[in-house]
Length: 301
Image 1 (cartoon, rainbow, N blue to C red):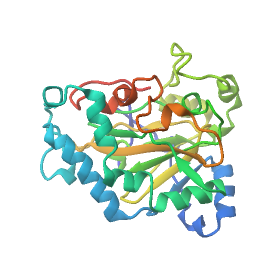
Image 2: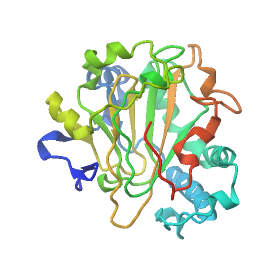
Image 3: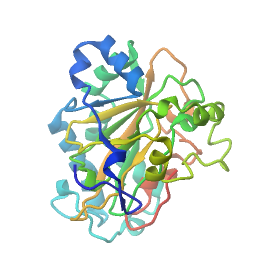
């Protein structure tokens, strides 16, 4: 792995670990679910169709190139440092919804191999939320540590996040990072129970300390990897996670998406399902950082 940065500081070696690949367990769903229970997450290398992922990457970056944010060839994902998005696409929510609903992206995020993976994870037929969190992060961007529980458990907590690398995402580009063992931090989890972020917006979901300070205080490690085309990571609502800094030396945009999945038999949260889902706050896709031009600063959740 390349140097891993958090808030522009290198992560000390003793606080850093590499995600272990659970893809070999897909042939044994019971063992896969046992690993999920043990680790709180599943890192799955090469489970998606690589050409389909590359096609989705070109589709998304093609839209960003059209508003002047990504250079040609679009599959390289290199930031121009400029944007004409506000001028050409003044309705930010409508634009980002159209990008997020691209058919090639949805063929990767909502269908194909990932559907079989999630059936195995839940041990029953699974379904994805229609609402997708598509993330294009330029150099200098990162997401603070947080749990997903306050966002997605209004109906129940049998919900998993699937984080997909839409292209190679080495550690220099700021991939996902998880806190080893954080699914057992009852002192943080118990006060969260019943907390719905959309009903309590004054309470932040992100932790007060950065990832390095947090890992050191807990005597644990931050787990990550050099993600490759076809890789995903699956985790539940009680695993602390965030991202490393994107410090790409070539100004490559980190492209990823995350989608929540649940058993098809359980009730759904209407905020994230339907033809035009309102999202967490009711603003639809306009509420996402992705709806902002790549030149604009944004804040973590």
